[in-house]
Length: 299
Length: 301
Image 1 (cartoon, helix red, strand yellow):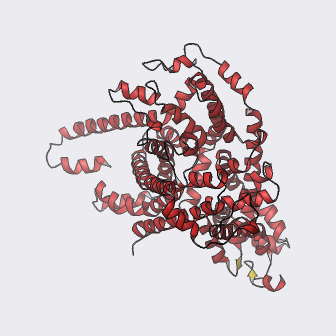
Image 2: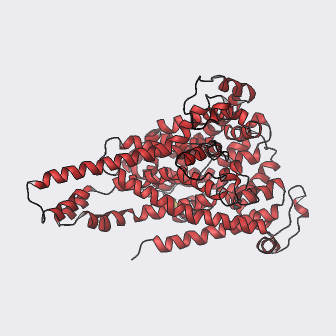
Image 3: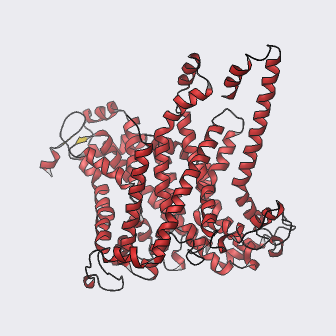
């Protein structure tokens, strides 16, 4: 980019012999400055995580030292043991896993059913239906928070898995995502051929369309799983007992008992444990997530 | 059902009920979990319903809740002001940072994938965990991480989340840090979708880099930019967990935001009617702002 404009300006002023050297020097300098900037920005993005990880292995006093002591003198693995014994991390992770996996499976399956109908059939009201689904995405969830809680309460579902799963089991995003994907990748000829062979519409969906959606299932599934794994407000509203706490609720409750300086390393250990599973999945699935952005965000 | 079925066709032009059946779960879901609650919220906002009381005892009282919110509830006014400030500052800053980083990383730099991952990671982390981490970083003592770094640089230390003037900006900074990477990736995807031949053709025609940026990159990014601005506006209006974990709206309501206040009013103080009215006011604010954004940034014929 910059080299092009530089060439335009310099050629009128400098001799041919000077030019390549000056240009190379300038390019080197630009690259160096760029890398220093990127390094600095990376440092800002990564510092909070590193600080927490290192802090989780320190003694409480080591967090107070001036100037900053980055590394723990002797790693205190004990911090992890203590917080694990005091708080039901295993149970809350299991809860989060059950909820996020169920929601992801349902969002993916029902989303592809609806997406198939919207992408490969013609019916009255079709455009209005798609417009409706899209416009629901513009209305934030807090509008539905209280009535949905009231429904869940009336059904006697408060403090159960049902409350955490059912209200999230279909998403407009999932339907739209699958419509886009199926419309672009499932060939009409294949569907026509199946019909000629006398295949029923449902069977066709199950044995022809679904296998073709594998990659979209993975992308949508990961996105939905992570969103639900990290969700906070809805579980906060419908969960009461500690046995039903999701991981996020447990993390937020850590603050009550572990807010003081004495427990700070344990709080950091707990936060690290809470971060690792979600972040690991996020980093491993990064390519799929970027694909997901490419499929929906950009038409 | 048969009569309706005749109104849908498969690709061969034969009538079939299949699409209606495939859409049945989705339709039922949106009727129960979208349309019904929406109407319910509007109705509740017009009553004095208290969730402990029987629904049949709720008294219809017109726009009284709205009037009370706007005239006699000083905390709601602070919450709206803070939320508005939050959105109006954070969305442009995040967009600018993300666009800058995306343009930087769009060059063929070795190691840019690693950098993209590093900037992207905060987006995948849970808000609750990040809020706890940043609360520790913002620790008001001289030995808090941020204060230590400031002291090291010779700058005055601050009480961050404990200060009524800095509590909200502190939360906003954390949110900028969390969301910049996401928008950056969205822009990077958009940039990589611009065909290289546009640039090549422009070069052949003698365009310089400023020209190609102005006439190729910017127009190509416009729809994605609008999409990002709108989604981050809607997202920023819903800020909750950060405030809940880091300050609970304090000190003295200095960092109160609408969704957090609504949560307290509805689920701690059980004033459902007031909370529903707040939800509707906030929805109205969002729609107005988003419509403004679409008008300003949208396609111009």
